[in-house]
Amino acid sequence: MYVIDLGDQNGANICFNNGNGNWDSRNGANYRVGNGKYAVENGNIVSIG
Image (tube, rainbow, N blue to C red; front, top):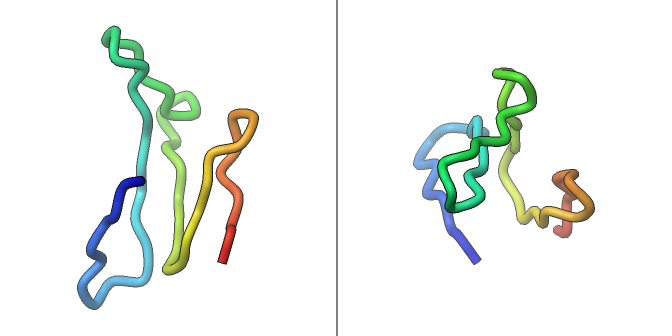
C-alpha cells in the first residue's frame, strides 16, 4: 500500500513503473485520483472507499 499525503490539494496525477524502467502513463496522460482510497485492478484504477 502507498499513501500520498495530498495536504490541502484535492487529487494527484500518478503513473506506474514495472521495475524494469518501463512506465505506464496512459500515453503521457497519466492517471488522476482524487481524495480517497484506490486500487489497481486489471490495469484500471478503481475507488475502494
